[in-house]
Length: 492
Ligand SMILES: Cc1cc2nc3c(=O)[nH]c(=O)nc-3n(C[C@H](O)[C@H](O)[C@H](O)COP(=O)(O)OP(=O)(O)OC[C@H]3O[C@@H](n4cnc5c(N)ncnc54)[C@H](O)[C@@H]3O)c2cc1C
Image 1 (cartoon, rainbow, N blue to C red):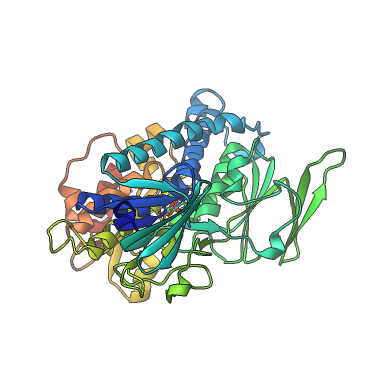
Image 2 (cartoon, rainbow, N blue to C red):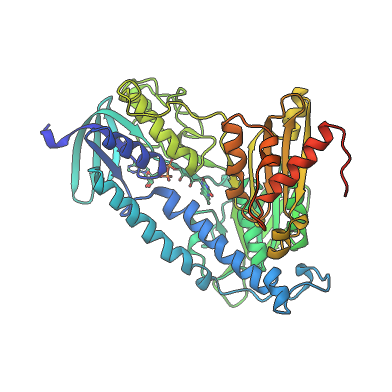
């Protein structure tokens, strides 16, 4: 083993978790290498997950505004007459044009990451990594096999979509997942989305706004089951307004591939457990993701991996082998880019004891972190839901502000927006913030900051907010909550 192949930290995977771990190590003066199987760095986040899906969402959102939304009303194309978009004959936009934003953003994002790693002295080796011991990794690439040694090895290999065997069909391009969807050339007229979790709900809402007739199916009886029920109900209302059909409490048992007459293409006939049958041009399967751990050599080292390929770690993201950590989607929930970054940083600080050296800020995940769900309309939340607080027997009030009550809400034309503040009756502290509507994922950080600094609802009442803004929703909701606590009536 030459000195060049010895590292303080070997990271397998260049997604958010791996990047942040590597950068934290490099900033702490450690010699770091990232092993990445793909030709470009950035992980599934940049190439298949967050960035492509959010780029498509942005394109469809803007298209929706100009064709049928608020802007469309000004252009005389909107539904001022009260006619539902679903009732209008829909002209599907050109998907190739909608992908242009993605095609511009992905290479730029990857180049920014590559540059950041280079500037911090992190070496990137392209190839497939496999652990061969507690401190050794083998990297296979087209040019040969390399052997590396590291004081610590971080597994940041991410996750991939799963598709149950009974839902597979021998028809190219008919059944898609969040990876293969990215190769789609045109929007389907009809689409069945299986799974009403975050990825399924996001894509269902996007395609629906674009004009596709979407059927969203889930065996659970709720859409986005972890979201505040009032917010989820608001989303369902909006999806149905767009013509989305929602089938809950049932699942797909079989998909029949039916060849189109005089063509090489197939359409799908989806059989649901409730006996109904839905025909569609495409099926999008969003039924969960499994950790990318096959062939990594973890079990051989005694590291526990569950039946979904997820690695068992402690709260510092250490595995049962002290030199090996696992971070990001490969350890499971919450499986977000935002939390993966943090996990990488925290784990690296823990491994090298940066806290003692004064090089790390925090070594544990915060209790409260936000969730952003990029459906159209956007959803974001932090803290507890009303349902959780009720189950705990908490004494709280709910302050509500509807976007349509705000000048900015009127200007942007968001009729659906809603911000909820859940406020403790005794302490006036904020127990949860739940938002659906424009800019929800940005707005949530105001509530997050107040919660983190142990502020209470009076902060919003005493503060002056820019006018007109959507952030004023906090003030309106705060007054609503405060007045309930003090028995004042709401003049509405
Ligand atoms: C459709 C979709 C939308 C999403 N939207 C959001 C969102 O809006 N907000 C959000 O916060 N999160 C979102 N996510 C989740 C987010 O993308 C993930 O949480 C994040 O990418 C996880 O980062 P990671 O570092 O764990 O792994 P990944 O980003 O998955 O990166 C893992 C990397 O490891 C590499 N790798 C795997 N095995 C090996 C090996 N043996 N050797 C070498 N390299 C290997 C892979 O090639 C990959 O580059 C979305 C995910 C999907 C699928």
